[in-house]
Amino acid sequence: MSKTRSLLFTALAAGAVLACEDAGLGPNGSGGDFTISVGSGLNPTYSWSAGPAFEVSVFRANGVTPAWVVADPLNEAIQSPVTHGTVPGNATELVDNETTLESGVRYEVTVKLANGDEAFREFSR
Image (cartoon, rainbow, N blue to C red; front, side, top):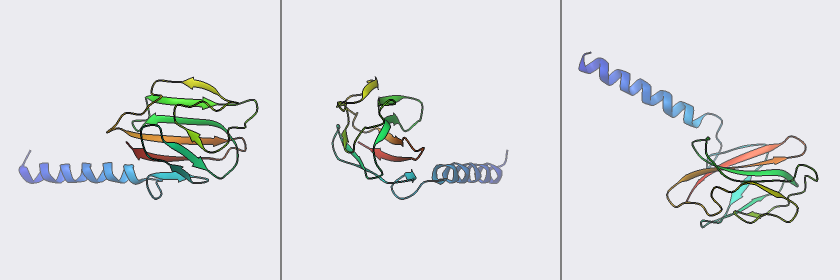
């Protein structure tokens, strides 16, 4: 393959990756029906104002590895704010792979409400 074709292919591939990364993201790598705020530190506080949740989940940004998940599917009453690694009194911890987050890693928190609304926010530690 010629050097020109190789450079063109590389530029097109990079553009496609960048377009995919930005699809559907709002400010600060967020999206959904409401806004989530993420505090600082390795055990941040997650806050939202849309009402009680039935699930709060945190995944590594690769979307495959769950770090921490709490849920209250019966009462749907997880109140904001929630501190990472601390299980709210009315919730059950479903995943506890990372009760303290790892520095230098990108994560995504998702909050799901009983009415079907949900939102997410990406963040780094």
